[in-house]
Length: 92
Image (cartoon, rainbow, N blue to C red):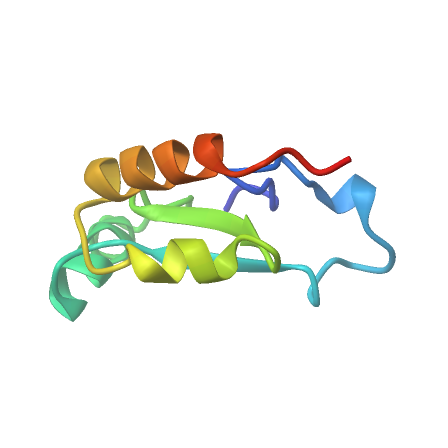
């Protein structure tokens, strides 16, 4: 499993106190529950461990944006999230 790195703002474990559990959520993308779990199941079925291709880390600040798109294919969801986050005003 990859360590947390927010897809939007690139916040990482090194940027937060403690172990980061309170700062990041892994979001699984897919149109159905089965589609969301399929990549992880393939890894498990082959005896491999790793980071499922449709699972993406988000910081708490960007989690609501990710959740708005979690019922889409991962590539479509990430394109939409990127477009929406690029339109947001920069934090100063």
